[in-house]
Image 1 (tube, rainbow, N blue to C red):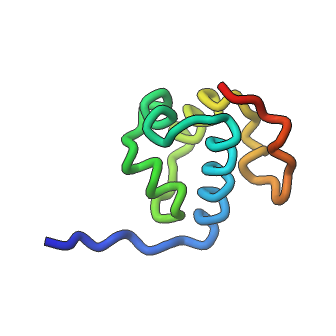
Image 2 (image 1 turned 90 degrees about the vertical axis):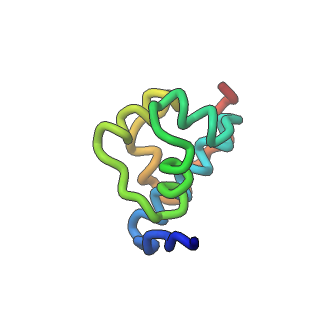
Length: 86
């Protein structure tokens, strides 16, 4: 049985790509970040692909886990090289 994926939302895709970039800059696997932020790995992966709209509570948990300001997820082209691994 094939389960179709939700469609990609262009606005969510930009946020998801930025989230993945921050996660990788912090040196976290999707599984580790999801667990620490109380999300399923599948939901985090779908959010990073722009296929899942995160709630305000989920975003709050993610930025607290990543130790970043919310604006960092919405800034285009911001420098992530200054982020240290967690």
